[in-house]
Amino acid sequence: MFDTEFFNLGYLDRLSYQDTFIHRIDPRIKLLSSFMFIVAVVSFPKYAISGLLPFFLFPVLFLALGDIPVRFILKKILVVSPFAIFVGIFNPLLDGQPVLDVLGFTVSLGWVSFASIMLKFSLTISAALLLIATTSFPGICFAMQKLRIPKAFVAQLLFLYRYLFVLMEEAMKIVRAREMRSFGKRGKELKNVVPIIGVLFMRTVDRAERVYNAMLARSFTGKLYSTKPYALTTTDILFIIASAGLILLFRVVNVTALIGKWTIG
Picture 1 (tube, rainbow, N blue to C red):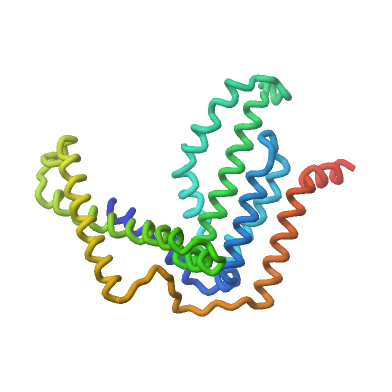
Picture 2 (cartoon, rainbow, N blue to C red; picture 1 turned 60 degrees about the vertical axis):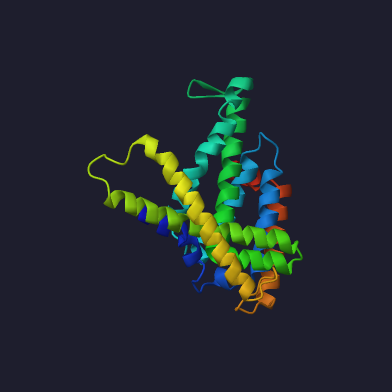
């Protein structure tokens, strides 16, 4: 079980090495497009629902054109969904003003704002996951460096991601060692958790120091380098123009309401 979760941790990065239309877009373009998308989504008022629905076009296109497994992305969204639920679950209690009746059930503005929070959460998290799945985390850091984001921040962000795998690797070794020395439930009591965490911390610090010394021996100066050359193409420029145009259109115009009015006639 622990081994499975460890290997799933880097699955998003492995997806980023595919060769599809979305994967071939320059990382800087995808980063800017995702940033504009997230800003536009979170800028909606707290009671907005219909205006957010057209934005699902972007994750659907990324999933289809990038050949990303839908079930995997949905599972990741569900894992972190309790945080969004905790943020908005009290809205129906604090904002009880009725707004409409559905099959005898009175829907208050609190439920509307709760639904809006969940929609914004789903859109922003899916955008971040799909950005990593089609670019890779190192690719995102390289794009941030090219966009003149402070070098120290980019390096810290990349090291945080890299050392997360170091931490998981050391934890996996400790878990395997404990399981080999445990019979039945022996060694799995709660009192043994604290010593295990202490050993994990010491091993991680020691491993990090050795990795850092190896980097210094290879003349690391804090600048990130990529073996893959990136250059803006006509496709990249057309992609950012189309993305910005659609995002602006969906933000300014309530497309869902217009379609509803046109359907009703």
